[in-house]
Image 1: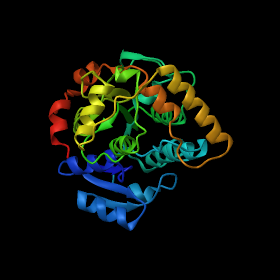
Image 2: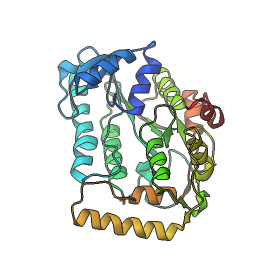
Image 3: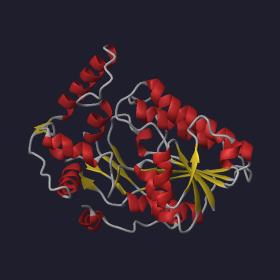
Image 4: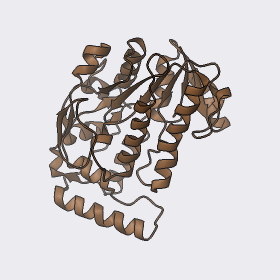
Length: 318
């Protein structure tokens, strides 16, 4: 396939190119010469453009889109989330259809379903929430809805993959933040880290993407995870250990951390403070909830099975 891919400077996008460039030709959205050089080294052809300003000329040599870009910063305004994640997706869909591309694979997230309550062993039948407490979740939900509404039978085909807590080598999103929190003495367990979670190693996510491209199922949504359930304490302790960092035993209750997060975000937004607050609502609520996922549908329809276990993957991170 000739694939136009977004989010190539991110953890997920760069790994898709690196691991699948021998199977497909990638045309990678980049916004700078530095990024262009990096994607060329990964095996892709750089296409200088940005979300919201993609043209038919940028897509002319492609038949498929993998859309992995979004506003993923922990803190931002609604406009920042909307402009990139929602309006950027909307414009990309419009130009992809206009250009005549056949397929659009959207990398979504399990977070679109999260409103602060425990989610135990959920699958793709779990309904969209009526409203969200979190800008990231809300914007990604609206983007997924746009993608699913854009499908046209045998003309423009879409698929959606939802990973959960993507991790692995070269992770510059989650792991560095955790390491800095421990070093700055700001790390604390919530509920003693006993809440359960599913995770998605980057190699398993790319395997899921590969399976989706090979076994395309039009207008379907699939969760992709490591197919293991683990406590936050077990997972994060192992993850930090790959950097020779040991988290402290400090603990805070679910109720207290959520109260603090709500107050802090209120102050930050009221005073229009640009820096990221010490704790955000999404992080506080997510880490104090169970979030486990059933991937039977991906296994059955796509032939997806994790190619690496959590234990094996931890040994390979340096």
